[in-house]
Amino acid sequence: MSDDLAPEPIGIQINAHLRIPDTELTWRYSASGGPGGQHANTANTKVELVFDVANSPTLTEHQRTQIQTKLGDEIRVVVTSERSQHRNRTIARKRFRQQLVTALHVPRIRRATKPSKGAIERRLQNKSKASDRKQQRRSNWE
Image (cartoon, rainbow, N blue to C red; front, side, top):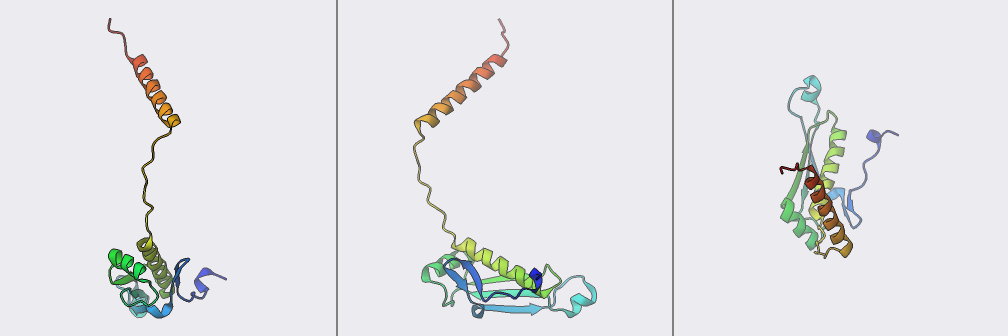
């Protein structure tokens, strides 16, 4: 079965602990602007996905704060790139998921470490080799 004909899943799985149900997503469809002839004038292929972060019962307070800090109270994804409404819906779902994954990502804290004795020794040996190489390139002016 082709990927285009596969039924859409219930909700959008963001990570292992979070799935946004379809009931919290608002979809709007309208005619896509630009060239395209009769098809563009008659088909509602422009897709707009809206998610209300501030009033979502699915999100924890911590998740809500993270998302609101990075994306605001409402997430809006608009897709007009394809001629098919179904493909634009699929793209909107992917973009929405990626925005939430990025907003919920917490970078690891870098802890400064001391270089090992071997690493220090290798660095000094490489510096010494580079110095010798440059010394050999010099011509004797005497």
